[in-house]
Length: 249
Image 1 (cartoon, rainbow, N blue to C red):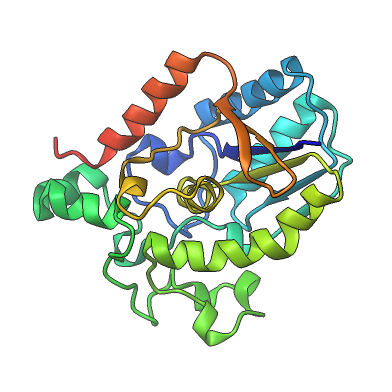
Image 2 (tube, rainbow, N blue to C red; image 1 turned 90 degrees about the vertical axis):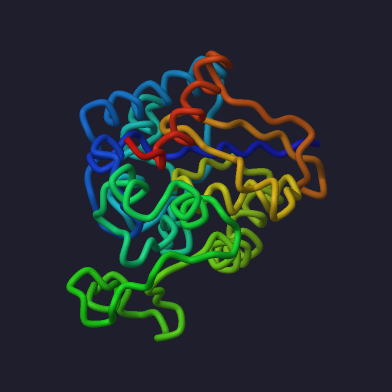
């Protein structure tokens, strides 16, 4: 018996469009992002997939993507679970900054470390900054040590893997077909865990917006098949575009 899991990075957000670091800032989808989410639903329908349960973050771009995708599938009725553990990586003091301008100021190598390295976090967001998550009531139930001021990918893995073990994996083992609509880095964390990618190789992994990634998992929940739906070349080009976002203009 195989288990079916689909990972979906949210459609393009307004700040993706503006090439800004987003992190935990709650920005909406762009018009293109709305269409990407609907197109994802059409790809899933063409694949003949039907979902039993979905998971998403507490950020609207992922929630909106999930809603639009499920609407295309006529599956808005399925159970949906939301968790901060699926949120994007917290980009700290970089949130809101233009990626290319930041690369011009600090150098592309430094920005690549902040964006794509495994264990180098960006500069932290001050606790008294208006955008610090400790001031947001959706995180009021978290312990103080769970509220990040900045995160590396390693930190994101540390909060993501327990959620995989406590929520996602049990749903899959029950035989449910699962859709996860989340973010570039929370999904990189999950892919790293699923595919046993080492710390150095994960730097080069980029996940495109709005293109479903299908996994067939064995009884141990290890991948026996993995692929993006739709045009393979389009998915590769979209991932390469994500990699170029940190280049100076």
